[in-house]
Length: 193
Image (cartoon, rainbow, N blue to C red; front, top):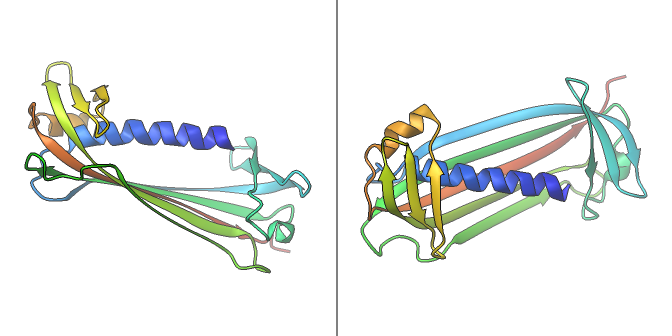
């Protein structure tokens, strides 16, 4: 499970950087993109001792998920139950006057799980706000170099045609405050008899 979250985190960071660079034309907070996905899988096996649930998606691909001990309702899950996983992400950007953006990375988090005795499920969400500085833009190569709040320098190749339109208005020295939001929800519906 940790490798899944690491993979998501890496993808999220790359998306934030790409979208951040692409959306710097906004003069006020502007949602650059929002993406929502949902998938359903079927419970094939449950190992209560190891807290592993084995699922199969609609294409027949199987995978295992470790269930955190905080989830008290694992015993309520049954083979055949349908697990729906929803994922949402969005990015907004605002060009700021020098020094006016968020000074540090600001993180807000929230989560909820179903009450004891209910079917397993829950949600987790996170919002990250940071200001990046555009160091250079290579419009011909569709590359943008930025400096993060910690001073790390990132060069990103912008491949998405829509995002390439946005970077045409970027220039060295622009400061852009980004707000990235993501949320995951999980619900379990019983198998119908």
